[in-house]
Amino acid sequence: MSDTVFISYSSKDTQTVKKITQVLSSAGIRYWKAPEMIPAGSNYAREIPRAIEKCQVFLLILSESSQESIWVEKEIDCAINHRKTIVPLNLTGVPLSEMFRFYLNNVQTIWYNENEEEATAQLLERLQGLIDVEKTGQTQQQSEQPYSKSFSAATARMELPKGNSSRQSQGMFVESSRIERHNALQMNKAPVVCKRCGGALKQVSRGTYQCVDCGYEDYDSYQKVRNYLDKEGPRSVTEIIRATGVPRGTIEYFLKDERLEIPMGSPILLVCSGCGTGIRTGELCEKCKSRNVRSVKRKLDDNQYRFFDRNHR
Image (cartoon, rainbow, N blue to C red):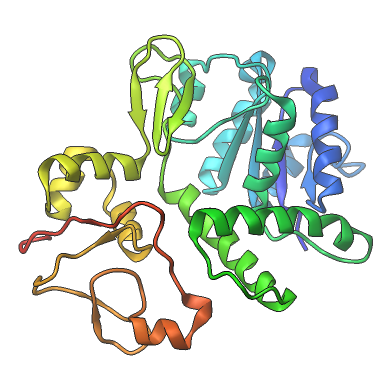
């Protein structure tokens, strides 16, 4: 199995990075970082691009030093070129430079400086939602505890079916929840810094973020759509894109994920991937859901939002 997490950092943050790698190892998460993983006789320029290309997640350790590092800048460029998922971990609460703000636009940051223990738990949950944790031999027992925590959190958020306590069923829904979290992180972009002053943002409610410096409020992609539809009512995809700036692919994802639905009476419907019948939201009709539990999609706590009008393209 290839290494799953590439760690990009400044050598001045080595002590903190060492603590983080110990946590990853204890959770059964494989990682790659320089210089100790560069083979003898090779060099940075050859091995780092190769490791980034093979990794599943790019973990960016943010600090004053890393924002000044030419190597970190090159590594981010490489990760973006290979379309890797970037997970920023801000060690010191340092504001982002203009360059890093450009790189990390709409990428949600974990704030290590505010609560180390909570940030570490959040980091593990985020990584476990994005990668396949290798479970062999001694690492299997170590990695089962984060799986259990991940499953509990997923059932609370996603309303997965409860009452079946078999290990087989639990493992199936853990896998499903990890895939869904990966999709959600990719599609439902959250703001990173304040658009008004560049300050740090705090999440104040579901999908809503507030600047700690000037109080400006911003929203993730889904909340932007919700706010628009609350105000305007059913609208076409084109109108939603124009008003919110949320990409078409993201809106289509929300539709398939049952966060949005086509209004009743619309002449154009989605097609059930199981039997081909017309549906207004999700990927399966109710009959196919009952026959194929692996593909069940549960509604989130908030209501669906109808968004297509009759001329919805």
